[in-house]
Length: 109
Image 1 (cartoon, rainbow, N blue to C red):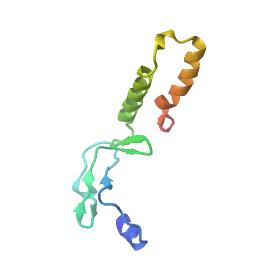
Image 2: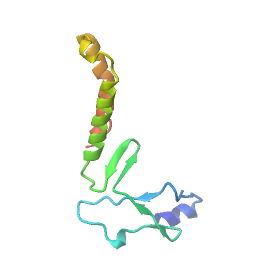
Image 3: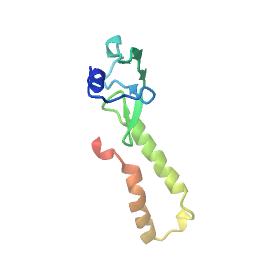
Image 4: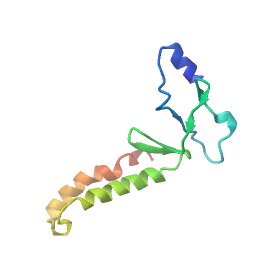
């Protein structure tokens, strides 16, 4: 198992930061998908943020990540004072600034 290989190479796995998330096409997880670390089962999670991308157990679904990106963009827009009074030129510059917040991770989909 991967955990044994890690220990054989003196790589220590932090039990507090390690969780289990099984990516699948659909259906429920079975007992054979349980992973243990030092004879304790890892906590199972339905989603996990890795390098800024929210992964979900259904591998083809990025709905949660898209919701988070949209919420971040809305928060960013609300922090702009007098948004309705911006010139077209300033609005374009602002869009170029906010666009990466909205689209982060979209290219992987």
